[in-house]
Length: 96
Image (cartoon, rainbow, N blue to C red; front, side, top):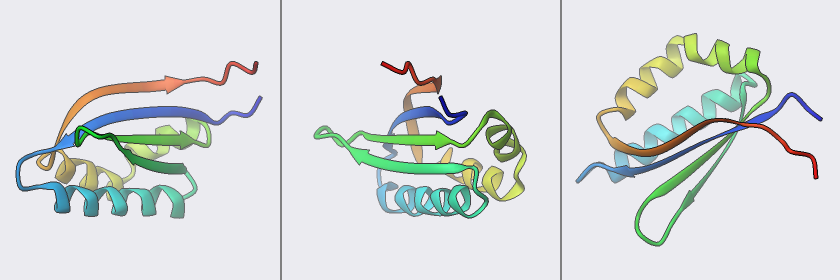
């Protein structure tokens, strides 16, 4: 099994912030990819909730990302743009 693992965040934009939140998410995704922390996939449910799947390359990559000034700025901005509904911090592969 790889060291890669999954984090999931389910969120909704605050009123009037959908465009801004999606732009911030795109910026986060670009940084995560550029710095090889992992990869992101974004989905939208029918009830306007968003589901962000982030596949971290390793625990070390996740730790580095949590201290990365570029990502910290994006996460701070995102905190004013969305409401987090549910987070799964670390889901590991079962290997069935």
